[in-house]
Image 1: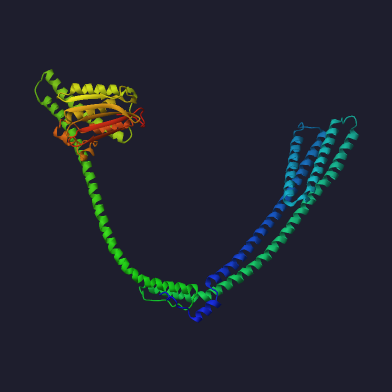
Image 2: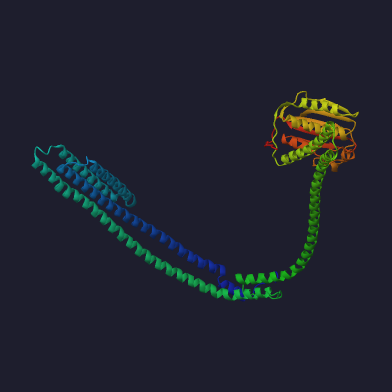
Length: 548
């Protein structure tokens, strides 16, 4: 446990703390010494490597210059030999060999100049003498080329003896003596430079070896001293800590570690004892937390069960959808099969009777095709694969035409009115699809709404809006949440079932959204239904092919 407030450490512990250095100080001193040795060694190694690289580069350049001088000498002697042969026995290749060798000589001189410039940059101005010697060699070669050219221009037939004497003088004196002396002077200089660089490199290597030995000895002494000091002070405290940790691991929470001094490890042992004392206190807290965790698990289990119930309802909805599709398709298909069976089982019939059978069959097939077509259209719209065919249309004319058609088809006494707030509503849309939307909304209002149906065309943000309202019994909030689901039929439609498939509003929604618009139904129970859709001036949605 912690030391009581106001208590003081024993005098012996104070004396030991004042005499002995802390472990942190010992570690700091040991590693500082090792770090200093390492830094000195690193600097020495870097300096030695840099010096060795300098001497190696100097030696490499000297070797390359020496080789280039040998190449220049070889090419020059070959050129002068060809010149001599051409003067004595005639030029057989029309000067092509001499031109190639002359190009090689120019290249040798250029490379020598570049290499000597690198030596000047590496060593200093003392290498400028090599550039001067190279210039003398180049001038001498140019002078010899000029003398050969003058000798070649002279006529050998007028004075053959003088011609051969002059040629012999050029070959023996100017080339074998003077030019060879310049080349040997250059080669001797490069050999001397190579020897000098190698000697300096050996001196640098010897110096580095001595410094490395000294640094190694210092590092060894420092490391051994630090290890001995730390080992002597760390062994017993670490053993006490290890034994205490093993006891706690076995569950002996009453075990305490002895704290004889005030070093860092002694303070660690004291903190360890305090920690063990708190572990027992935490067990009660863990028990309470365990109980709370069990309650939370129970709550989460209830949530998962609720989610599972939702998933089961979703699966039931899916099965109901398949059942609805089967039911909607079974009725027209049954009609088609029944009409065919009647026609086939009966005796001979008149053409008029067969025509009536075929008409009823065609009506049933058309109804089936409309259901399939509406399902396919809604599915493709949900998948983003519907292409509309927009063109310039007047929405006012489409709405007015649909209202007139509704009045003509309505066989009841319902009142259908049209309020045209916007006289002209020009936009780009697919006229047949928009007409289909208006017809769906009108048919729903006339079939399932009240006695009064009102159609309104007005402005909307970025386009136009069409509203179809009736004063019927309306829809509940639950029905409004499902009106755009396939095969859903509200209570008003179910009461007056007349063969509808429950696909009108989903198709209308798919068409409006394919144009980049919106559609919504609002209703108050007993206050009728208001269906409103908006279309933009220009289609904003991406249209995709709609092939069947």
